[in-house]
Image (cartoon, rainbow, N blue to C red):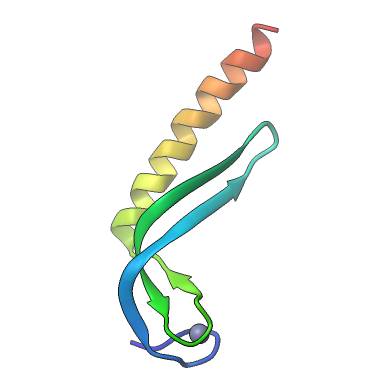
Amino acid sequence: MECYYCKGNLVRSTSSYYVRRDNYHLVIERVPAWVCEQCGEPLFEEKEVQTIQEIIEDMDRKVDALAKAA
Ligand SMILES: [Zn+2]
């Protein structure tokens, strides 16, 4: 497998995943990922993306509820 950006070699490692929403920013550390040896760009697999998606959906609901309670 090669990097989508620079064609460098990808190695199994971990990377942080950053997401910015209207009401919060979330950084998840040490997410398993393929990381480019050359430019450091991470490539996340479907399984991890799915889990992160579920976390974000849950966060969206809870943060919205919190904002409405203000
Ligand atoms: Zn690269």
